[in-house]
Image (cartoon, rainbow, N blue to C red; front, top):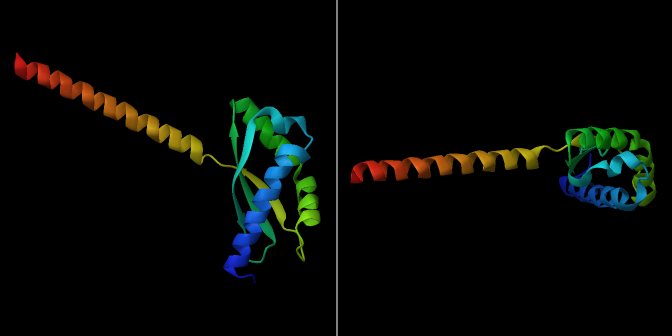
Length: 131
């Protein structure tokens, strides 16, 4: 078992290296369909498994196409990680779509709608009391 500090350090290295691969290493055209960024990497305590969370900006079709491209490039990503990061065993790589940015956007939109509605209601009540 690795210490939590080592796990965090390995996760950070994997995030940096996969980000570099997204920019210049992965040649699959499907990966370029949407704007992709690595938001987080979770590595198991035994350093055998790495979940890579990616945020994809674009249409639903572009997101699906990008995820398909990422899933097909997992062998390449794992091989490159093994070459770039010196570990006894290279972790199994799994890509997951990170929906947190979209959920945050949706939450802010709902809060703004409620705020605008409240402001309109307060203005309407103010006009009624004046009459």
